[in-house]
Length: 525
Ligand code: ADP
Ligand code: ZN
Image 1 (tube, protein in one colour):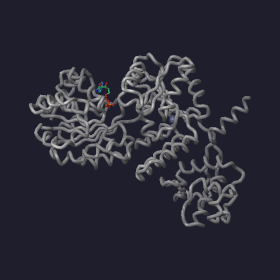
Image 2 (image 1 turned 60 degrees about the vertical axis):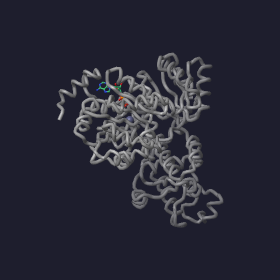
Image 3 (image 1 turned 90 degrees about the vertical axis):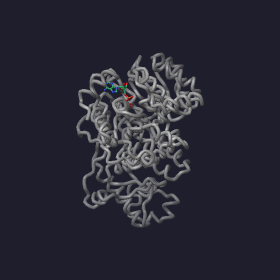
Image 4 (image 1 turned 180 degrees about the vertical axis):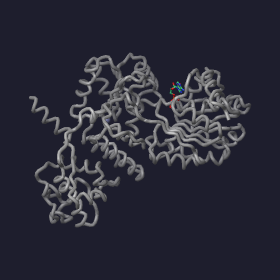
């Protein structure tokens, strides 16, 4: 076993660092002892070192699987510069260059080999792996193996065969993003053997999270930027067109901005990114294509112009703010119309499993956006991390707690309506339909199912449908109702919901933000 002292010595000599980041030393020690390891460290947590340092200290070759072709070259260049013999194989190399690297690998000249997953699985490559004295396998961005992750890549699936090809080689799976479910999926699919699992805290104490009702998004963005002159940041948009139009309008308003999306040429993307990194443009308006591997320390804000598709993506994107440890502001513009738009995109997907996952993820995102609870508690909870339920001082809901009201009567009405339509028809209906019944709607569906006969019909006429919608969604968040991830997103009572209905338990609800704001405005003016 290698002592802590000699690990530190290598850390200093080769990488120039004085100490380990959280969990690095434990992970490295386990890896050197030949254990399988699962490491969940936030972006910037120092995952690469976890396999690079053991690669230096043990004999043989470490194979690093990574989906990010552009980053492979950077990492290999950086290693080579510090005197670590490393190379990569991917589709960017021409035949001669690839052959030269193969010769080097056969001669045992390298300590690390970075390879794209599809490369490893090419016919004949397996024989090479067996011949190269591989002593460690590291799977970077391991969440790509899971459909439950936000970045599933089918070619990662084939990595399951590695265990058979190289049964005695210890494996390490690394990711910055994995829920409980994704974690289990990774461990199972890679067939990790009794892995030691490490998880670092995902909390980003210097980031403030806010969700703002989306009204005139461009004007809101402009006002935000004008209130923070000179600060640089990222605006994430859901479409290529939006990135371009927002960037153009900002330029017209004399705020330097460039678009970034996968439809631009590689040259344009490189140029815009470079201008942003060098602080020559203030704002980059980007699709999610932007960011993987971008390490700009002084990003002061991340603005979401549109609703992200899932919480993991949102966490990753906001995580690009404040890398230097100074305050970072994360603002999400949210509107119900956005949800409708995204739902229609989801329904266009052909694969039913994909649709189901996308719906469930969107529901979680909407819950996050509408929640009146601490954003930090919600975000970290999503990653399975508990956070003390106290004022975090860094989110809208903690800084300005939302007004609440006694919602017992309203909740009773809605819960009983859900209960009655189910009782009448034998199955659950969507929230929209339940609210039609509650507000005495005369739709075809109401007539078809005979729901004007149920006792809850029309008892909620005193409120608008929109208000009922937000109450319904809050009851889902409170766990009194549950929504299925199927197309019709039917709602049903949970055991708690049924108990609350029967016991007439007191239920406190939050005033929807939009309503609270309108009141405040009319009071002022
Ligand atoms: P991740 O892959 O987890 O996002 P990286 O491996 O790219 O993180 O590391 C992020 C940055 O932290 C890199 O610049 C790396 O050189 C640096 N780093 C890693 N480990 C340490 C350490 N022990 N001390 C100081 N800096 C470190
Ligand atoms: Zn908070």
